Image (cartoon, helix red, strand yellow):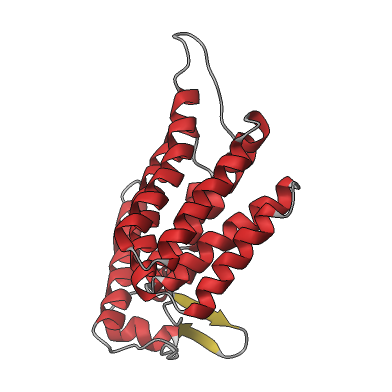
Length: 243
């Protein structure tokens, strides 16, 4: 009995890897319906119970999609869908892990800004400016933060890299609450955010990738340093961040 669970787990993992290999090799394409559970299990030489567990696991990861009355399909494999699990994990991370996530976001945000400076269209630049103007026109924290998120979302989209944009979306939603906390604790936080956003916008408008990279890195780096400073608590004391 003690040996059954590990063996079953191994077989299920093998089934997962086989299905993933079929997708990677083009035997199953995005949007395509899978063979029936029975046929697929027979083809791969795996029990139906293990195949069922493998399909459930890949469905939870966003690789497969069960459609009621129709069957199981390979999803479109869009980066945003596949990164939903990452977003959930990131959302449950404690303060020290949040600092790591902000570090990753700083690297990606600066790269996205540099790419956007080279690729942004006049229409999308106008959208970036619209959110910047909206932030300047209100003192309501919720409105400011909503336009803050939209400002960065437009820049990520302008970079033209769907995977990078999806990663930044996950990281931005996680750091949203950290910015809320910062705004409440530091009186000039929103004013600083406005100035930093204006610097990013100027670099985009000037089509200057290096200036955009530096401005974005400084912007996210400020939030990152703010959080790291608050994680440095005295020995024996504890401080918990639910950001």
